[in-house]
Image (cartoon, rainbow, N blue to C red):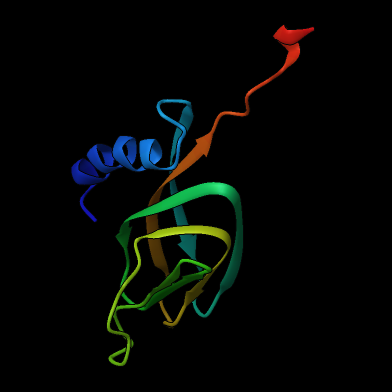
Length: 111
């Protein structure tokens, strides 16, 4: 997903989820060694894929992203929960994503 489009998409998506503008953004970049498998914990967060290197597979409860799987009819750019990132290559694979973290509302002002 193009970076510019992602930046436009996030406010609409967070509004749909009921957060309005109460969230933080972090731009992240992963570099995976050959055949590396890494778990990313993103519970109560969204990870929006921006740029994914060839031979990378990203799986979560939202779905799968894997351009190399010819049987996969849909690639999911939005992920949450426990995310498994796999480098299916003998080369280094890079992945850029935006992490969207909803702000936790505090009841401290109610006391």
